[in-house]
View 1 (cartoon, rainbow, N blue to C red):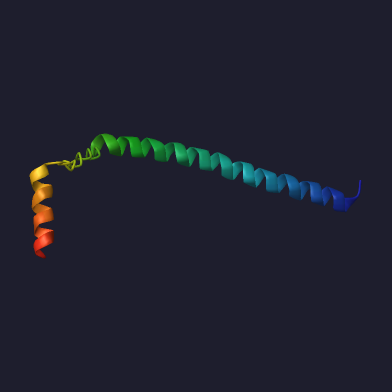
View 2: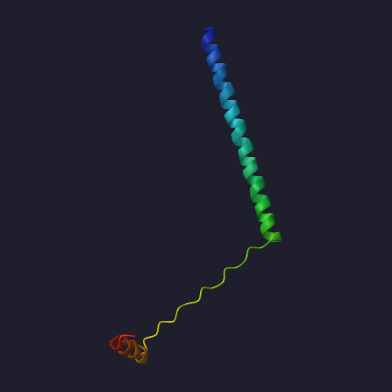
Length: 75
């Protein structure tokens, strides 16, 4: 075979091996990170969100009448 072709094939296999090794290391790193975060959530549980205050809608006619009266007086 052509020596340049063999060099190209060997470079291809070296490159693919490096990428495959990096992906395997990445999978293990993500797995370890997941375990660490789960452990930290047990040690330091997240705060539960406080319920937001719901604004009470009022349709009291006396408030509306007061607002109209004040608007007419120019206050």
